[in-house]
Length: 259
Image (cartoon, rainbow, N blue to C red; front, side, top):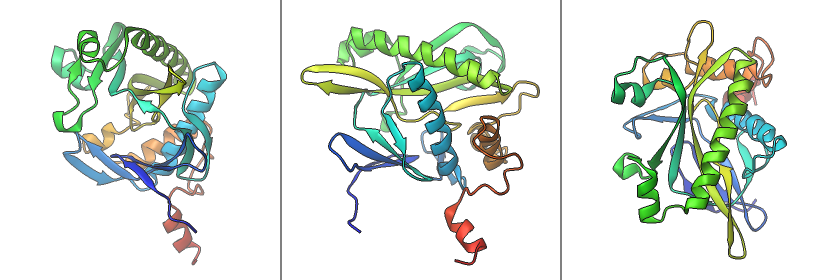
């Protein structure tokens, strides 16, 4: 079997050269990081769960006309995706006060915001992904004004859809991160949704108990990270009730079966 050429490795995923021009294979790792990778660890089976959850959400977004890089899931940890030119901006959509917003503005976590807030952060680990404004984006040419209109419109559409999707299964979508990329048709670039949507990049709280079902369990040393990710997958109908028979970690699954 030919060795695949690695294109990029990030904190949670590895990108490999795809089988056809213009495609990549996106591999989901179990590595967990927080606070700009100052805290590192492993959540066993996280990559498998994030692969399934992200596949499910991107597929549903495609049905309502949101353009994405997702093509299909290949196996437990890999997806086939379109190769895009990533816009170097993280887009954070906030519905409820939490995390850095609460710290910056002194608003108690859990307070419903008067309106949805969109924030932009410059993607640069060395700088700690600093918060930026539309003025910075325009001044440094990271995206055109037309592209930023498209990004904001898509972000609101995705937020509206996901709020309903999660509310239907008793989950409050507090905030989440999106990334976008360009695909080129000759000289014309089109903005599409990229990266992933999973409990790694979303704050998801149980609507009745406010129990955290996302990576905050790792960030804040709450424990139960795997169970939280499993619960999200289960509520979305991606894991059977009980979940113990779900294969999340292929290596341990093989050991249990004596292979």
